[in-house]
Length: 197
Image (tube, rainbow, N blue to C red; front, side, top):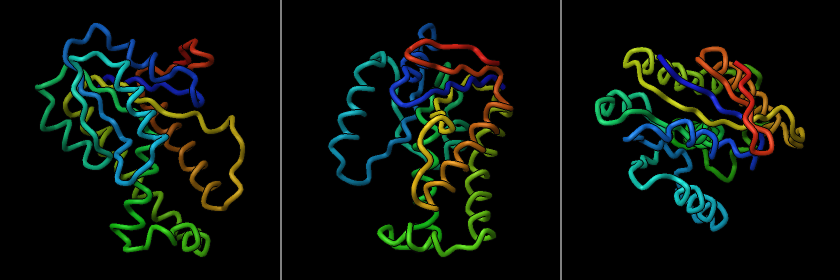
């Protein structure tokens, strides 16, 4: 397995740096996890800016589910994969679990979550980690080159809501898990990458 984790704060330059790591790869699959199932002009503009910076030869796959299956079925088609980003994947996966798997109304997720016991919250965390374990397993199995981009969440403001604090903690745990297993880890600050592993 050969995967690299690139982390940093919002607008730190982490995506640009991650893309530069693959500039010598001819055929790259860009796994875009910002799947737009609703109208959001600001997010749409962000996506378009990201698209303009990528080489035209790169192919984009928009998904946040079954990434392990996608890699397994396309491993011979690409030199490398770039997943951007871990944080958005976790966000989409959380709401998918709450609405599609648990049948909750998306407008009531935060209220319902506030009433969950620690055990109920832990079950959701376990379900989310199952996805990362599957991704890690397929990278081991296929020896695929992968760059993962994630947000460093420990240096920002602590969220006001209980769900926000739980989610921030979860993102930190996912980042630690991915960093521990990664071949190399970079922390990007003000557009300057620092190799920390």
